[in-house]
Length: 315
Image (tube, rainbow, N blue to C red; front, side, top):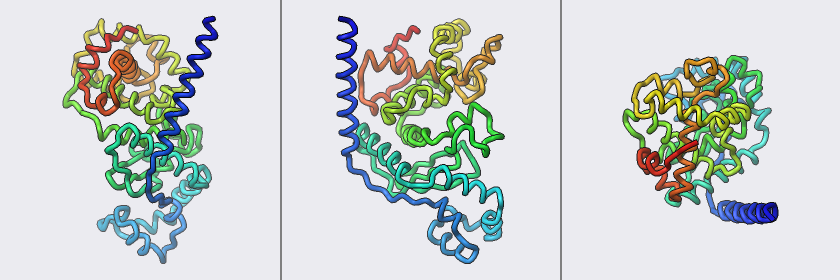
């Protein structure tokens, strides 16, 4: 009997998810998609002035032409462009992913105005700026999404590489939008910072329904399982040390900032994933939303202390 009820419940939830996806996919969005990375790769020295006039925001007047000419002839730059073209040879999948993210944002945030242009580029693997989002323009650095095992990332730390795969493009676009549309607290306590990150990731998962929590957290599956299994330990540790309401900057480095592991200053440190405070913040927000179901815009503009008090989180 139990298995029958469970199967029926899963069927109902699946139907509701399919219906939601169809509603989102029916939302009209329009934008121009430009592969600037390919256009620059195919630009000759003679046509440099043409591309400079076409995309002036990429060519500041303070930078002399000699710099661009040197870049065009640089073997490492040419290899980077080649690898990007190899991983992203066609535009259809990219355009579909970006379009669906815009549709999802529009569904949950009806006042969202779709940027007029989405432009892909390379950034010398500057992974701190994977996506730049303005009211009218999105700049997507494709060389930061080549795959965690790509040869060009050999000098990049593993905890960073895990977030440099093609399936992070949609979530990174969603997070860039959410970061611009939520309240930000000056000098937050640790728990406020944890919950703010949780608010952002909870909303990102709604905008990217196929993205797992592990993917959004930039965790491997093993790291995510560790976080799940040890959530109670992490929570009790933070409480026992009176860290939750502290504003000490070092706590943010230990438990919020991207890192190879979280710093408890214990023997288990090397086993832990980084940014466990973000993981806990997400669980608090999930608990809050199970108790008090509000729309995403309201969630993003709810102060963390309200979420903390109402969630009554107990892992």
